[in-house]
Every structure is written in structure tokens, then in C-alpha cells.
Length: 122
Image 1 (cartoon, rainbow, N blue to C red):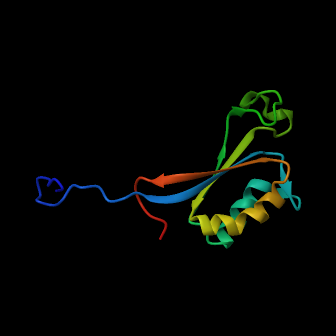
Image 2 (cartoon, one colour; image 1 turned 180 degrees about the horizontal axis):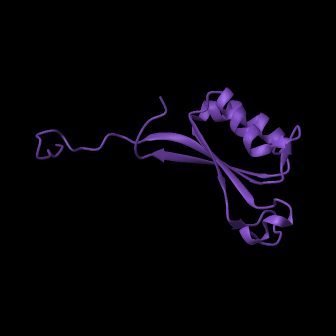
Image 3 (spheres, rainbow, N blue to C red; image 1 turned 135 degrees about the vertical axis):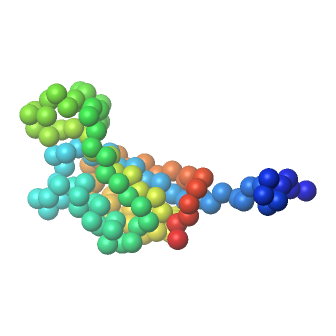
């Protein structure tokens, strides 16, 4: 039997919704058709109606076992990391991943099954 809160409503937890989160590791210098790759990926994801996506410009990091780049070395050629994270259903992710793999063929793409603690993908 479920417990009840002060308002008399059941406090038993609803099952959490499952989703897929994809993280793409890029750097500022990456391009797609002579445009910044991170912006082109965001445009593509939006055009494919992906639920949520963001590009994060990092202040330090490294890719592919190279040296650590920091914001202090901005004049060194735009090699600071950019991370794109997006979340959607498994079906949606399966549909967009082939194009993303082509666009970022030289970069790391990580796919994870995640639990939506709050909100939904509708």
C-alpha cells in the first residue's frame, strides 16, 4: 500500500522514463562545410526535431590524448574543447546518429541510456 503525503495524495513514485543521451567531443576548430561543426550539428539536430541539445564551450580540456588546452591559450588556434550533449528517445537517436558520425567522423561520440528524473520527451 502506498504512503500518502500531507495533501492526501499518494507519494508512491511513478516509474522513471528512459531516454538516450549522446555526448560529442569536439574542438572549436572543427568544421563542417567551412562552418563551425558544433553549430552545424546543433542546426542539424534542431532540423531533425531532437528534443534537447546544447553546446558547451569549455575553458580547458584535451581530446585524443593531446596536450591540455586552456583558455589562456586561445590565441593558439581555437583548440578549446566544445561538447555537444543531446537527449531524446532511442528511436530518434538511432535516426540521427549516422549523419552525426559522418559530420564528426574524427571525434569521440558517446551514447548512454539515462533515466529522466524530471520532465518528459513530449
